Amino acid sequence: NAKRKGKNRLEIYNQDEHESNEVDFALENDLHKAIERGEFSLHYQPLLHLRTNQIIGVEALIRWNHPKRGLISPATFIPLAEETGLVVAISEWVIEEACKRLKQLHTEYPRIKMNVNLSTLCFLQHDLVESLERLIQKTNVDPRYLEVELTESTLMPNASFAIERLVQMKQQQIKIAIDDFGTGFSALSYLHRFPIDTLKIDKSFIRNLSSYRGEAAIVKAIIDMGRSLNVSVVAEGVETEKQYKFLKDHGCDYAQGYYISKPLPFEELLLFLQEWETE
Ligand code: C2E
Ligand code: MG
Ligand code: MG
Ligand code: MG
Image (cartoon, rainbow, N blue to C red; front, top):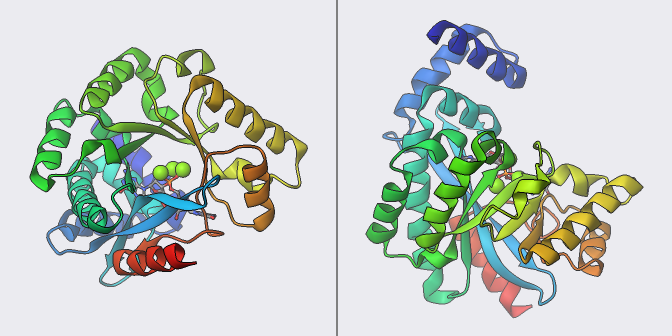
């Protein structure tokens, strides 16, 4: 039902941009050309291991530098790319670029990990496993240092399919993280059946950590659950020293957020890592 789909897309998009439909179609048109025009780039946000104070990984986050409109947030254009199917080609580009950078990072920082986000449509592609394999071969990276981030809303609608697919990715030695954990329809009864390595606590829980007892209780519960399921726990959106201390004191494994660093262009990431090591 193309008409209904198109309508939904515009609604989703308008929520973010408050602009006319005309502009939406223009943007969709621009999105088609953005890859070949080289308008995408990746920024990299460091992940801090709280116990050792070491940067152990980075998350690749896409940026679209639109020739007329400037930087457009992925929160705006990824949903559009998802609805139009363009996200599959964009994702290929993202994973290849991220793997090339991972390879480059490994010459100096052999233990660093690269996280990439995968949208629902990409996760459902019948040839996902093959195309990941191809990109790993092409860039010659060690797949054990590649972690794919998926949300509960990607995994849950068809959990048995998802489990099967995750098992295939694990056979490729790729690592799996659940992103924005706690915001989806967390079917906790399923969690232990997913072969995951990492839980990333959504930033909405971290934001109110110090002011609301409920948030603190949830964060503590996720940290404990991670420990008993033997998966790593990352806190997203760590912005203050108070939040950082809370997470460290309660045994959270990793922290990511502006308190440590905002997402950085690759060259700035290299400088950041250098400075971090010498401190
Ligand atoms: P995400 O994967 O949950 O990424 C975390 C988001 O939180 C990023 O937003 C990051 O810039 C932001 N962030 C990091 N630290 C802080 C902090 O301390 N405070 C606050 N308020 N925000 C923080 P960004 O880069 O705008 O990306 C938004 C979302 O877009 C991502 O959420 C992810 O779902 C999606 N996305 C980004 N890159 C890609 C991509 O290459 N492919 C796909 N499919 N989705 C992507
Ligand atoms: Mg993510
Ligand atoms: Mg997230
Ligand atoms: Mg997200």
